[in-house]
Length: 332
Ligand SMILES: NC(=O)C1=CN([C@@H]2O[C@H](COP(=O)(O)OP(=O)(O)OC[C@H]3O[C@@H](n4cnc5c(N)ncnc54)[C@H](O)[C@@H]3O)[C@@H](O)[C@H]2O)C=CC1
Ligand SMILES: O=C(CO)COP(=O)(O)O
Image 1 (cartoon, rainbow, N blue to C red):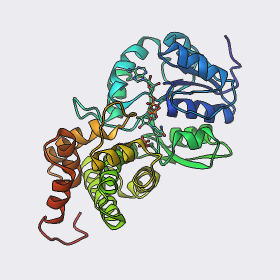
Image 2 (image 1 turned 180 degrees about the horizontal axis):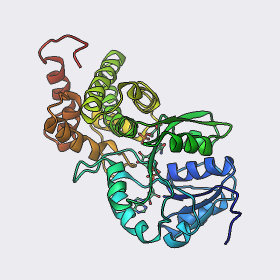
Image 3 (image 1 turned 135 degrees about the vertical axis):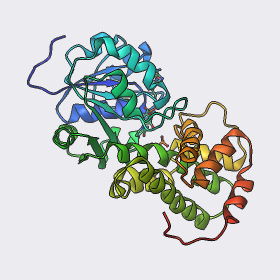
């Protein structure tokens, strides 16, 4: 179907909770929206105004055009939002590459680091789609809140500040406020690593160690985020913002977070089989390796990785963290 060239034409890759919510947000911002889902039933349901698997109980405006055909999805797009899980990005990009219009922004909305290589997602885009500017959309934003039209603020980062401003304006609408940033690395790291600390915070709560321990875990996790940020060249103030402190506040304290509830299950000793996507699981392992390679002290990230590997228990991890050598609080 041809679309009005004056209307922003946004293509969303991914028919999960966040892809659906962002497609709706783009629709509400006045865009013509096409959503690609690999699953035909999912595509059909979203076109009808529901996503019973990932956004149960929420019905929304139909008006999102859906397809399982990637070429058709990308045909006349002028901006692409990439909303499949972090570990699938490389394979999705290989499929996207032959059909991707040159020069249009590719906006990453997943939160994670590639498990196999340690590559930041933006560098995978730069490698596979060298002719498309990459941007990152991140910040404290539960899909269900955005799909319900509740007020939410996020940040959009691009290396080129003008592009970041254009994208922030493009996706802002009455109840979605987008700030701009030129710090891709900081925004990316904040989004990826908060998931690891959400697992840690959930584990503390699940093990009934108390609200004080939860606050300590999140605060010291934030120190590790700032240390890794410094090692990777992130701007420190970025991590004090929405994709950093803001997303830690949200996901380290709410049972709406899949990473927090994954940690809860860990702390309670419950089964971890068949749980919803928890991006912090693969990211913890690779973040622990990256921290070691960059000589960054990151005992919480290492502890989460070791717990997930089955090498230590939550109780052992907390005991080890509590008995580390005493130190000055502000030595980043
Ligand atoms: N749900 C939320 O509140 C938010 C999620 N995010 C991030 O967005 C990303 C996606 O999360 P959700 O949509 O919530 O996950 P989800 O589990 O609800 O949906 C994931 C979707 O990706 C599809 N998918 C998985 N592998 C694929 C592949 N190889 N090719 C094509 N499609 C594939 C699945 O079929 C599913 O439709 C994650 O990185 C998450 O951290 C970011 C902000 C908010
Ligand atoms: O990233 C999110 C909110 O900002 C969603 O968190 P979860 O993936 O833990 O549900």
